[in-house]
Amino acid sequence: MVRSGARILFVLLALGALAHSAEPLRVALAGEEPFVVEGPPFSGVAVDVWEKIAAANSWTFQYTFFPTVDDGIQAVASGKVDVLAGNVGITKDRLSHVEFSQPFFRSGFQIMVPEARPHSVARLGEDLLDIAKMQVFWYVAGTVIALTVFVFLFERRHNPDFPKQRREGLAEAFYYVISLALTGKSTYKGFPGVLGRLVMVAWMILGIITVAYVTSSITSSMTLEKLGGRISGPQDLPGKTVAIVSGSTAAHYLQEKGITIFPAGDLASAVDAMMQHKADAVVDDAPVLQSYDFNHPELPITEVGPVFAPQNYGFALAIGSPLRIPLNQALLDLGESRTLAGIFHEYFGSIYQP
Image (cartoon, rainbow, N blue to C red; front, side, top):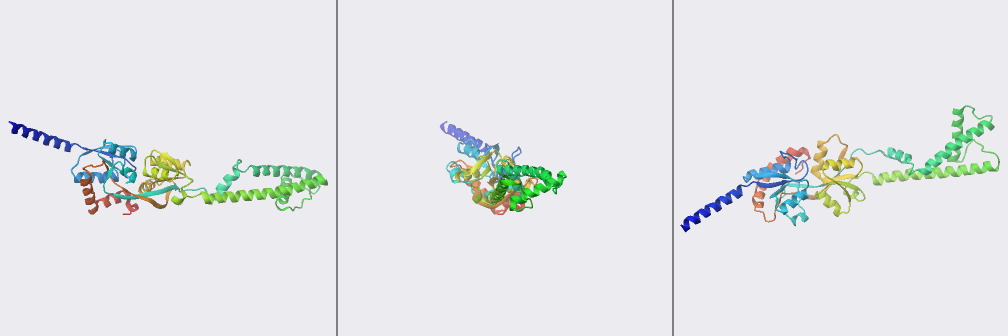
């Protein structure tokens, strides 16, 4: 009787274990296109790789989408899910919370900037039209106009040789004013008397100040255009505002470097912030930026500089997870059979460099 009860208990335990093993794995998805394309049905590079791994191990699973990779990491660490798939960078900080599989993709950060930049001449024009920056210039311009009108009225009344027509007379007066202000020489004899000579001296001094101020303003504007214009690499990011996707490894990296960030919910929002001049550039994983650029040819955007801060992508698992070994074995098989390379070429084409 005791043996019969023990057998029944063993069968029940075995059936319970089988039932538990048959429960679908809880798989979290987080990240950006083309690694995770939100569904359902979900798709993307990481999704395709995971489904190959699951098929090799005869695993069933259910997907749950998380808005950021950090949210997915927390879900794995707390036991809410079994695996996290996506463009999940393997970092030292994350290793204190979860374990990772073998890397399945090599990556790094890159910089995206607006491809269409205002020409220097256009920017100089903007500066000249900026009254706040060029108040002295506009005061001088107003003075020149006033002097031109005064010379026109004075000469037309006292100089019989001065053109009597308004258009020709104003043009001649303007020439007198400008030539004297810029060169100190003019065919115009000036106003008679001591007061007239003092006006002429003040006029010449005003001209010298105008030339010096305008020259220095244009030089300053051109220098700022050269120094603060195009971003060409990570060395140009300090002092700039950089749009990032919240919860991404790029966000953590830039914060550690002390670079000002503009957080966005997704890459499209980050690019939109850059195009609206809320940020100077976007930093994200190189393949993510390249894929976005390729799939949005209508946008004036481009990637610049080298891939920096290299990192690898892996699947995140709970610390001590029994899934890690069979998952790694399947990953190695996929790599040796060139199945991984086929998936990457399918999504990236010529962009992918193994």
